[in-house]
Length: 286
Ligand code: NDP
Image 1 (cartoon, protein in one colour):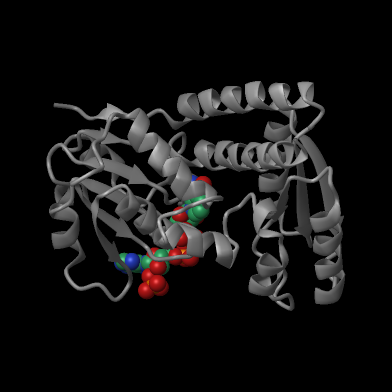
Image 2 (spheres, helix red, strand yellow; image 1 turned 180 degrees about the vertical axis):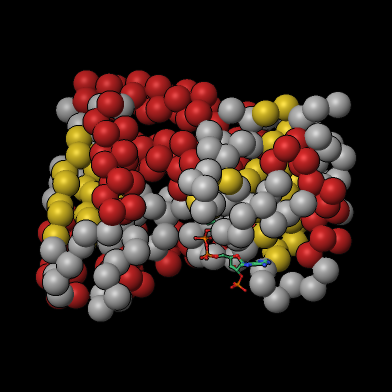
């Protein structure tokens, strides 16, 4: 039987509509949710990401404070800006677009963001809370993957889940979220032996490695749920995921396409986190 296609675009649109309703409610209470978006340098891909995040935020009724800094910005100048945003009551969420120019220390910048304004969920305190099973702000892409699983009706508790990739941005928080939701999790990476065997045993496969179509369809356990985080551009211009989609869709129970799967959820979850932060502010003000 052909897999259910998990339509990330449609689910993200629903999340954005939920955010818009929450933002309207907050505005009615005098708390306009605000997101500061910091872009350092001229990386064209980062500029595209920042534009789409800002546009989606404005459409959802989230105030956007854009800060475009030159590539020559020093660590001190960037940290000073983060400090000002930390203190600015109109700013609920702070997003510093990665990657930063190489002379800047990204870890130090993320650590300087107030944990309760960490819309990207990458601050060590928020990662620690996630590891404790008491999450507050969760990294946007893995949070989006969990929502996709839920919307697709996938049972996570008790399932065998395999996460391919162990980055701080995707793989590690993903593994923690699945473990917190009572899955039995295997976290694979470039040194993993017999990757295929791990994938073949899994009821849930999350692929976040950045290797075009590396996961063959024949590896997928029949009926498994497959969430493909990878975004890879081929020489002919096509965008593909980390999973060989057509073959995998013939065996999986449910699968996300690339594009139109995880990608739209990442932005939607940034807005969701920003609204969470604004709701914390509103609760504090009461
Ligand atoms: P990283 O490059 O930071 O991490 C890649 C991970 O994959 C590493 O843990 C690496 O292992 C592992 N890996 C690499 N090659 C192999 C292999 N042959 N077998 C097993 N594991 C391997 O990438 P990110 O986590 O940032 O992103 C992963 C992918 O997801 C990329 O395609 C990226 O574009 C995409 N992405 C998509 C998003 C979206 O919104 N849809 C958001 C973020 C990322 P090791 O640790 O040993 O090096």
